Every structure is written in C-alpha cells, then in structure tokens.
Image (tube, rainbow, N blue to C red; front, side):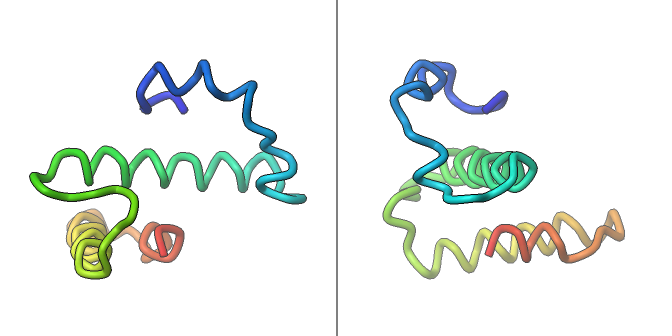
Length: 84
C-alpha cells in the first residue's frame, strides 16, 4: 500500500487478510492491492466520482482511460484485464 493513504496502513493489522483473500499468493494480493490503489488515485482525482459504490459508467470510463494510457506505450491489455 505504498501509494495509498498512510492512515490506511495502521488498519492493516486489524484486517484478516488471509481469510478475506482466501488462498491467494502474496504476488496476487500485491497485484490486486496495486490495482485498487490505481483505481483509488484515478477516482479521487475526478470530481463527483465515488470509489465505492462504483457506478458502471465510471468503471467503463476508467477502463477506457487504461486503454488510452497503454496504447502509446505499446503495453499489453493486461492492465485492463487486471482492473476488470
């Protein structure tokens, strides 16, 4: 949670990560945590956008943003797939 709000780090010990995420590997947990932070940063930078609950149109716009962001860099669609 390096790029997330520092106050959230204090809450981590209170969350039972293992039971919440099942048998996911650390790499999987980190990957989804990074994607959540990416969504959080994007959503909070937009006026009137709610992170939770996310509206379908907002999610679609976010995915379109990821596609546009990856095209000039010739990146694979994996960022979009992970976000979905």
